[in-house]
Image (tube, rainbow, N blue to C red):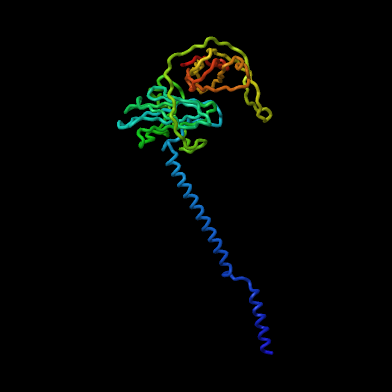
Length: 344
């Protein structure tokens, strides 16, 4: 009996032992698992960070054509949407042992480049041709007191400028855009030669190095220089008429397109090719935009719909020349704000 009782007692003890709550030591595998997961997550984070750093390093190595250059712009309230036109300037010396002097520039949405008093080139920049324009200005460069001026124009006041100058195949980006450039908001007749007094200069807004904002790394392309002007053509005739232009208006909280009545002056050049030159007598203290339409047929002049362009005058500026060489017959100026002739 004693043996049987002992066996039953043993069985009962075994069952009681199996029903005991787990001790802290029995939960150790869960803590180890969590620790391992944390280590794995940390390793993945470090690997991703290292890969991103390497990608950035090699992207700069192989795709960056501007080095330390930063995108710059004037100090203005971008949200206002007001027209903007100003001039970025820089004076500098160059080493005598340079192989060449090549200016790489992009002014978005429109720029004109001047170097040592000469109009070099420029263009309207579209979404499909965002690339660095390269100009070889070796014949104009000198060892001391070089001067670069870039005119920037934007119908809504938003944009960016980046410049870098190469001197040899190995020695690139000798002069670059940055905080040492000057912003001049008003045109003066001697601006291509010297800066105005210090109280009329401003520091640029720094927008960052590529890739920055809407601009990625920039490829290079050989840019066309402005052709020397051979003659200026006056219009054969001009005539005024009343028309309308579409514009966006907010009515009851909804944006709708409405037609705004507008006086217009059309300048007839016959069929011609060249760069339109606009001259105004209304010189103000702020940048202002003038609306223009190019046409080849008289019927296009009265159409409400159609492509129109904005030409932006800087403060104090009386004359601007279109960056683009076009083929056209008529140039229509809305609002009677400017006269037109053609530079060939």
